[in-house]
Length: 586
Image 1 (tube, helix red, strand yellow):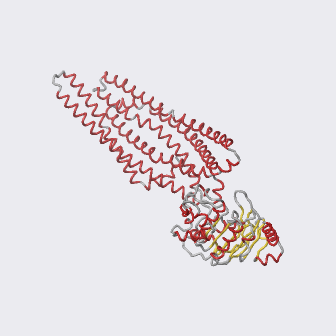
Image 2 (cartoon, rainbow, N blue to C red):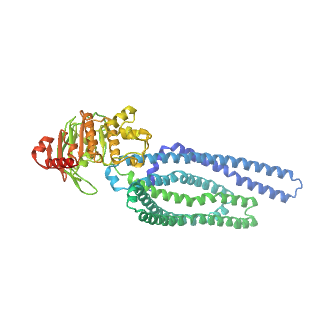
Image 3 (cartoon, rainbow, N blue to C red):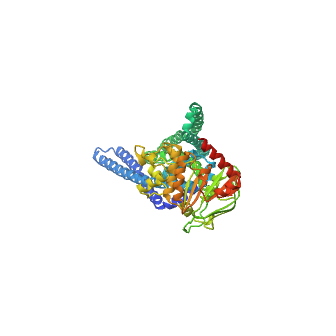
């Protein structure tokens, strides 16, 4: 139960619903106990009538009808109160489920990029859906039935003891055996449930990856191989599920067998005690049988509840693994501030934790507000890492990044990211309309603003050619659009935000040179008063920038303006000459 202690804060939050549920449960159980008493009374009256050998049956008939009406009335009241109990406690569990899912989602949002590199999407989805559902079964049905069982046991055993202490002792003899069996089975369920949830995550992760890369799978005709792999995974998951189910299935028969034994004990020892005169009325035996049967469901539910608790323990443990992670990127300053946009790197180095690759080594440069910096270099030279560090998706390993002469870690994280418009190389679009994807940068943008941003990104004509225009719904990850169209919609999304800093991470790699030139001309007009960083492998994207730096193996090997670097006859000059000759050949 150690892992489930994490949920105590939610029980405290909903303490009034919890306490009300307990009070209703107590009252419901008291009303349910009237039935055995009334039936016992009826038996005793019949027994007394038979012994008296009276001829007039009207009196006994009236007494029995009166008892029957009372039984019906108390049963209806007990049933209504049970309904209220379920409404109170089960609804509380739904609120807790809602809060827990939101908490997990917020934690996912706060965790760093390194976390997402080390964990698979399918596993994250399984934890927020399947695992949270298992936990809800604990805070709802498991807690409700535990309270119900405890209260019913307390009241029923008290009543039984008051009627016949000796017969009560005989009746509860099987309970220690029951407790031992529950303990042993619960331990096994916990172990098997954890294994099953892990395999369920593997299946979810694999299928999510397959569906995301379905075009590649079809292109390489790998359907059969993937079918074989998913079948193997599903069979392993099925095996773990059946293993868990076999243990869980022992509970029901075991509980019913023990209850049956208790009934036999009541009939046998109760009959002997009635014959010996220890019990004076035959109704007492009937009353005890009803009490035992009233305990049947609570006792049988112990196994089910124990199973739910063990499964919830395993699921909450998986949730706690992520919930207890302290996000690497912390917002150290909650005071709001205006970002102007000047950027300085001072001997910045960065090493990726997962691969230990040194992406940047002692990088130093400055970009003033309103200036444009272009970064060129080979694949893996550290260009995208600079963009990620400015967005503070990572913190530097060594060195300092200054924004408006303030260390980036001391700025309000919300203000920093809200002042930045990023266009990543791998453009990600949501399964929504094109309009809403562009408005993602500015939710209250008007239609004219959306169209203006699309025109600046040279994608308006493409969108207008669709049957539904800007209302066209995109497929998952924007699969409806081509690579170049996705990049240009992403550019429009950044432009409409109108941020102080614009970061373009090789976002024109999928467009032709003519379209690239048109976009760049528009961007240079838009970016006049903004700090802009353009990452590219094309010199054509960089030549009009105020400053250009060339990266190689995480180090700056050249920097200066276009004309300065051409005159140096170095790496930039050779790259410019090469790409210019390739363009002429085309």
